[in-house]
Image (cartoon, rainbow, N blue to C red; front, side, top):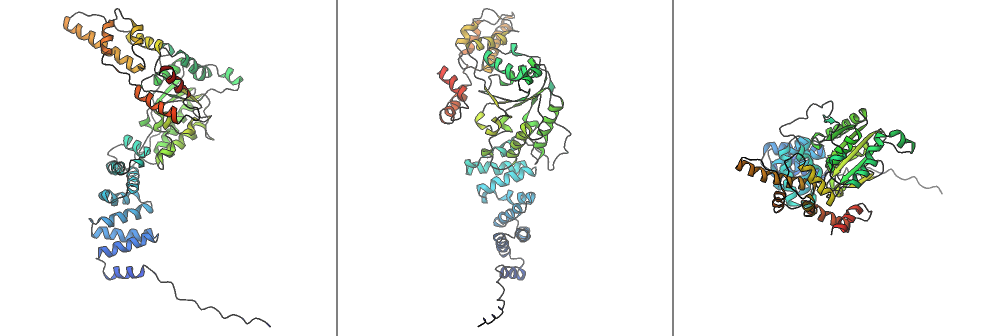
Length: 448
């Protein structure tokens, strides 16, 4: 027996619109600000951000001091990518915002060129939740240009001084083993490219110098360029970083393009962690894009870096993104320690070279200055020179710098590397599973 055809289903009643009652109430009482805020918030909850923006802007226009309306308006504007309107809404109500919202406000204010609002929001973020620290925001605040409400006209290129340094390794006191390593990694590949090419070694690549501040990383880089007799471009990080989205990446690309055009060239980035910080510390934002751009310039598909040597220097290698230390990028990582005994004696001799000097036992002073950096030793000579100069001014007779001047200066001098070495010791102890800091470990073991 055939089945009886089923009866057609009648359409049921249309689902009720949960916002209809609120819309009708606002239509009947358009000056009722709490009612309009409630409608705007309901639109937000429903994901209807454009409708929420309309209602909440009307509420703020009617009652500019109403804080809950401003908070909701900022949420709607951020959801629509309208950063200027979001900053206008949230900047006056910082006390009502959650830490994550404050961080979002700081980032948005930077993209709008509103540094004071960004600074105020970020200061409150750190006060409420220090774990939300964002290195990208901090760098943008540090290097942003105050007083510009719109993006400047893009410059055709970043101006970076180019010169062939007049110093060489002979002007660097001590560190003979380190200089020999740099000679092999940097100097000879650029001086004898054909020989190195025959062995499958191309000139160029990346070398990362790290160690305590004041121990000669920049000086070594300049001396290496002087040994090679090639162009040396020392990049100031503030000439790269820009507060406007995309500008920093564009400037970084321009730097590499110029270096490629003028090869052989050494491109030197001091404080490289400022543009190559570990991305897990940056969360989201311009800092991550800068790291990605640097990675692309070092060994991306279109990176033609033959005869371009990229030198980086950092006091904080643990803050550098691990991807930068892979082959093809900064694949040679060199520890620049505080000068040893013979290096300290050589540095003191170089610092005194152009001054009137009497009887000085440099070996004695060198023995009394363990862990002093090169900068510490030069400062020691400066203080001793001032002591001799003071006597000359009093007596009217020039006298040479003598050993007692340096001994007197030592009474007030302390090595500035100690704090760095203690920090490094913690990383060696707890974060050296991959052997990144073996050189530091050997140094600490030898000097403890």
